[in-house]
View 1 (cartoon, rainbow, N blue to C red):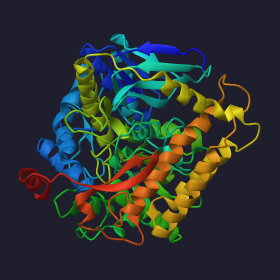
View 2: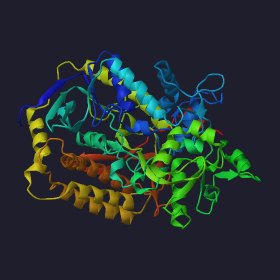
View 3: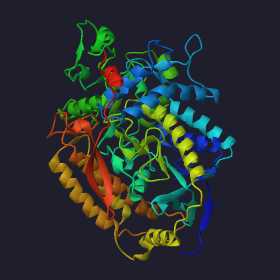
View 4: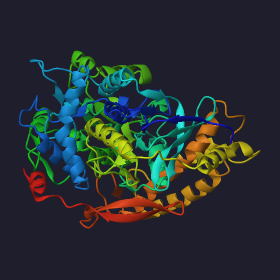
Length: 597
């Protein structure tokens, strides 16, 4: 390997979305020499796609809302599989983090008396989502970027990290390459924060953009960290289905939060037929009355269109499978018949322009065609609730790459408050850990040499596999066999296919040279994509029940015994294997909160 670029910092943050930016801001505020390394451009992140709002019990619309109710909703939404301490910290600290953004310049929508306006979202008992129209994530990224730049945090853009470096059992930095030149670069640091987002590009239909290839999940696992809850992949109920070029692009839950309803091809509001037994609708003469009085047994009032995402997604899939879907294989999301045009364009400007420009649909006059799209993974690195530390010394994680906070299913809006709360904690404790390290940690030169040699192998082959073909087969496999509804037979078939694709990926070929070469980049991304796909299928096979985002056709009910454990993925001799770990028992005072009406 030729001489490579080397940089030294106290804390390296990998990822420049909301979690990464918030972690870097906090680490720098603690006096740590901090850098952000991102695969794409600063702020080019899934955070921007979280449009509807950030969940925090501010109590500005419903004064009776508080952290205890938010905690209760989060635990119930996660089917009680959440790490209760993560959920508690999140509910308690989210309001402070949201108001902090306001101090930094966030322009939240306002109530008539000037307070932060909050909207309804699925699974939340009260209107709880602070928002900026339907562009909330974009506003958050704007504020966090501005703050990070003003603090003179070093930023390395268009740089892909391919491995974490270690000194013994401790993290010692990261090794990657510049996407433009293909030249290698080493970042030395005793603390690394992973904030790389999700795994969506393992699926054919996804709201995630090209960067989301499971890099952080794979980097952590390869470095020896535990992954938990990887079986729980959230398919957002509402993604675009037409035209094909935009299939999977997110349609914010804010449409339903502001009154939008779901209908099948004949115009029927099918969600009233798909209500689980625990929900009921009181007798009503009109749809509006039914919405107003639709009540679950815990007292929350919301229309059935705003049930938790896993339940709505399953209902939509069932409707399509039974032949009542739209011409393009979705269902209709209708807000035009419920709200006047001025309201729609004021509250949902992004959605209005998205459908007008991409699908030639005017959502103030006609319904949208939508269907489920792979959106978010609840699983990720197992982290300590207080510090966001992973199970490898020196490694921290925040945002979508961290597991445990959302349990079996994430409520809408909780992702944005999650990344603020635990992004801050990851940066805070990452900086503290770096200070506590006396001597500078050093990875051996052999590590860098081996990583570099492995990275350029696709250029050493004159013939072999096309990485694009492998990715297409991978996405088809995950979409059809490890999708919304799963069976043991299909999961075993998926693991067989993924094993074959792993072998073929070792023969992937890159043509030309390392100067901005997308084929080479994909050949390297396949390693993380195949890793996260395999562990998702393994975890789904291990959990023999249906719970939250995991629906097993062959095990259609929740199993109380599986409600007591996390499915854990670890590695041995470089290969992933599945294990189980008991959940920490919920303290009695918090249990009473969750069970209260």
